[in-house]
Length: 428
Ligand code: SDX
Image 1 (tube, rainbow, N blue to C red):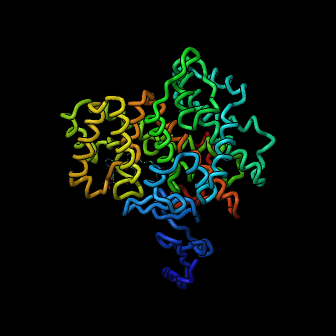
Image 2 (cartoon, rainbow, N blue to C red):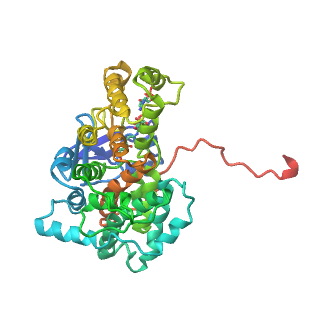
Image 3 (cartoon, protein in one colour):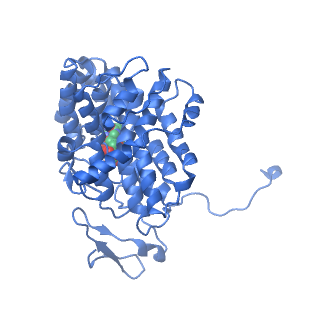
């Protein structure tokens, strides 16, 4: 913190001094808590200029396109680390030692199966249920199986819940996919790493083991790393707000999954593919770019723009490199969606509208192309985003619960009716 102050002068009132706090890097913040005693609130719809908490997990410099997890650049983690190591880093603040990593991986591996009763939840859904609807339901339902470890004030309970969530998400995600295609659920295997196991549960059948390509498993792990955390985004803020009521971790993560589903957030990767399919051909790109610029047309270029990044999303750069590798491995370099995506990106980066509004490709722009090439259906894209984001949600939930916190309860600018008396029906 610092001893800097902001002075707020209010008409007809004494000026008030508001403390300014400085972080280790990034913008200072003004503590506006004193405003309540002056009978006023701040007003910031969409929290564009609001720091909702103090955190040490992730730092984003939107102007420079920088993303750090506990100080480590996302490009280095994506290219040199792996998902479970990044998960440990997010949760513990430091990269694990060799022994810590081995023990952590073993611990996660031992929790990848789900209670057999969970299968019954899936049978209740229609086969064509959206897998995000299923994931919201079954993740929240996990709390029904662990009554022995839901005391959020008990660090041991918080730790085992975190392990169970990170370990079971791939299993539940793959079960949602298998259910949608009418195939039996495939058990996890303890001899496979995290990404290999997910692809195994997605694509093996009782009749044949899926042959896992190291390139695709590496790409899958990279996609998980690139989605692992992203500061106080909408779904992470949802997890924090839900957690601030004392709700159990499974309920909090289920709330985060629900928030992620929206097309403006994690649902954008699915929306990008739908958009590319709708464009259909490079010759129609100009028509869609014109619509995106038309104030009267609600259409937006999915996969472009970001609340924080006013430069390239560093994750999109790594995702683009990964897309090239995966499509080359699969002999799909001429995939029409990729051709349209690359042409769209080029046009958008040259178009004055997108330059002026600083709209760059974000993490969702290329991820869908990779996932589609890997044979994953579009409806599963946001499920995979949720899988990747789980360690970040847990890290923020734990950081909040592990330190003094208050229940989140924003106020409002009220513009409704002043008090008035009830009018009986026969007098209206
Ligand atoms: C994610 O917060 C996070 O960190 C999220 C995320 C994470 O890892 O958790 O990074 C993941 O959600 C990435 C974003 C995925 N969403 C999309 O790709 C959907 C398309 N993008 C837009 O919906 C939009 O860019 C948002 C929602 C991402 C950001 O919206 P903001 O910050 O509220 O910005 P805005 O809507 O006020 O837009 C600013 C201007 C507007 O024009 P004006 O009103 O100023 O004239 O830019 C325009 C918008 O109309 N604009 C777009 C556009 N995005 C913004 N115009 C056309 N196409 C777009 N995609």
